[in-house]
Length: 434
Image 1 (cartoon, rainbow, N blue to C red):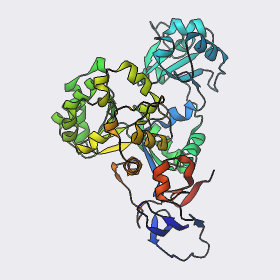
Image 2 (spheres, helix red, strand yellow):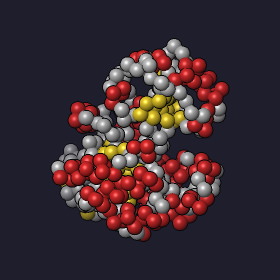
Image 3 (cartoon, rainbow, N blue to C red):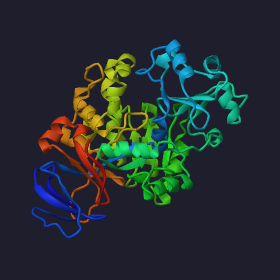
Image 4 (cartoon, one colour):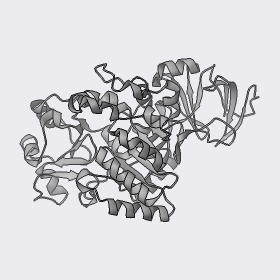
């Protein structure tokens, strides 16, 4: 196809010829016989956005799950009403997501049995690392005598017993295409080779328009109650010896400290990543930079969970949360992502959060961590293997593009998905207009 009258982010007016890859970038290109011509009409053309950390299957399933987070449910009685009214899915379960203790306190099997005794029910904590099942659900996964029904998401001993339904991948893909997303990095831990192959196959058959890169098996989730420096160092060393980078999930200061110590002991390798880095104390900033790892973080949580942070985290520690600007200033390569479904899947909302740092109530959480609109945007333009290095529109680059209706100035002023006019993957339009 030929994209005419496009404007690059730097203001350059150009036409772009795209096959599987970009073949020509120049003003005044002549259309060839049989070539699809798309008129960008002076709109901005970017490399397609890449969401550097999300969970495809979970995000697809969440489209058909009951949301029970603090924004949707206001207390124990409301939670009970929502769950009792929920329809079972195709797998026979009621599946709820986004739960936080501020809704109705800690959950266990007894509490869920009081709400929903007969139908299998599982509720995922908004952190993504914990599920709570009722007795009917525990029986189905082979754990009828489990003491409290609280199970870790990464524990394959019970998750393997769940029905393998595949709802919503095409629906999720269409939504991502509407945001201008042409590629994703799936950060789900524990994916098998068969899981990865299935996602790649979904892309090849067109169910999933976005190209897919998977972190598994090189991702490790750290837990505060199970931090073993020697074991983690050994695992990282083994991955590095095999020629593979690692991705370490760090959402607390303790997890970050252990991750950095293990990386220092194992040695640096290009491609190593720190996922989230939700809390980075001042004394750890230099160590993060020295690790050489890329931080893949989610400033959208400043908006989505900022009110809770302001209430629960001491004011003196607010500046440690979801850092972006200070990490970049220290020389840390930083890329952005949404962490969908645990965060909202709209990357433009994450960009706006990185720029404004405003919670839902309008309070600013650490003004010193703000970045410019251009910086926020480019942190969604990286390649999956080098996420902090923005891709360029040039011959030889992948034919994955995002065409916006506004000028570069308008795009940067608004950072709004409403401006996405077309999304192109491998030279073919997969989304056109709202």
